[in-house]
Length: 89
Image (cartoon, rainbow, N blue to C red; front, side, top):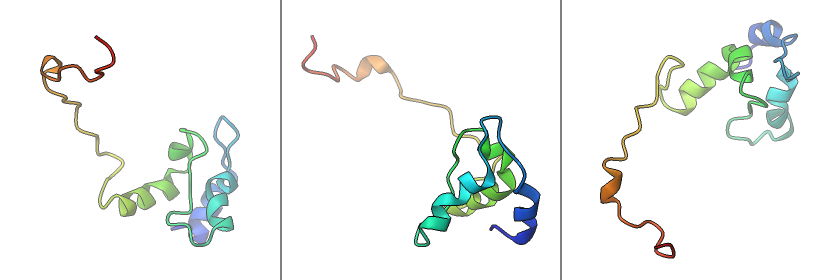
């Protein structure tokens, strides 16, 4: 996924927290057997380095696009759960 074109496009970018492309790919450079090889050093990295993250996330999660959303939470009626901590009355 890290083509020369993507590298050239992202190599000078930084998040507002100072994270760089090197921070994103460091684990993959040091651990060649890493399953994914990239990690977001901060939440903003997903946007700043999105051209690298988005296709990897799509492949890893089998079609989860950046426009997809998690379904809303539905834990049902919490009153039917009963006492989840029997040590507390």
